[in-house]
Length: 403
Ligand code: PGA
Ligand code: ZN
Image (tube, rainbow, N blue to C red; front, side, top):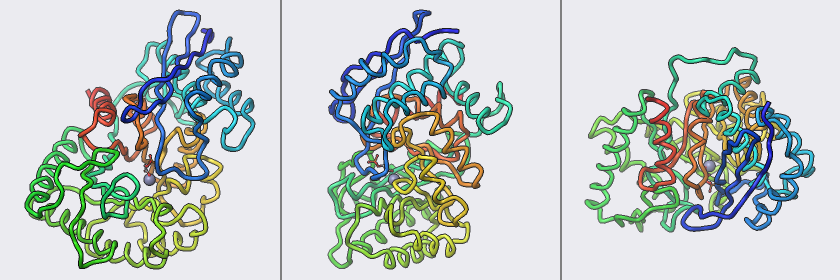
């Protein structure tokens, strides 16, 4: 058994030059592994606390270093439980969700290194145990469908679209085919933007197009319909094999009542092939609207919790068996430990919910999310657009795994 000898954190550059932390875990075999921790902009209020980098660095280098020295990096659950107990708060406010996640994932990477196996195999081993299945030694990997953020709005952009992410979702297939479809779709959108006289070359946080859709004649929902109309025309003209998705991030929108949203989603789904709706209503108080929409779409669409469920098994339990959602976003930094992520995904599987592993808007160049998605057999990944390096890192890791 190897032992952790040191935990060391420092500040590094993350999304667009903002500071974040890099946490490294060392063992007594002279091996080490790290994580550069991302953070969100459109955060749910039940997420694990993000602590300022100085605080997070200090928490790692003092409390967590003392707490975990001597532990076995293979003991993921033991390491995570110890950190949760030492923090002692519901949302990891004391030590910070970012410090705790940094250690949790770096320790996991170290454990994979010690066994000399790829990280996704290590994740797959832990997750299989958790759900009581035999770990897959090798064999064919089912690749997730890409939820590709083609057009941005909301708090991730400075344009007249109120919804945060307008997604294209290629048909299931090899990663290479899905990527080709996305590239062709993006190229035809770029030509359409020029043809319409919309703002070309304007990008949102995740690298999707984020210009204004010029339109004085309609209200904000009318503008939303217009962009879907444009995307759908491109889809039909070019016979692109994609469906559409939407992350409303409804928590950030105050200009419409849930009843109006519900009606709008219904009309959108009648006109366009919408397969996926994320955070269609607010994270609290809109349970009845979730249930109403769930009943109306009758399984034809993924209704996905993000701010609603915050990757937290305790939070997800509130919605179990309730016919409100049938999919969840998994962003490990929302909850803070891999052990809780595995429990969340095990619960999702029990409930028959689809699982989408997702980046944050304010990412780093780290790529472990690709291994996590493959290791847990995620149905979808959401890694942003191909225009920014911190997103490409994850796609490139998926390609490496597919090889
Ligand atoms: P965030 O947004 O990373 O800014 O929270 C992403 C999302 O809402 O899916
Ligand atoms: Zn979201």
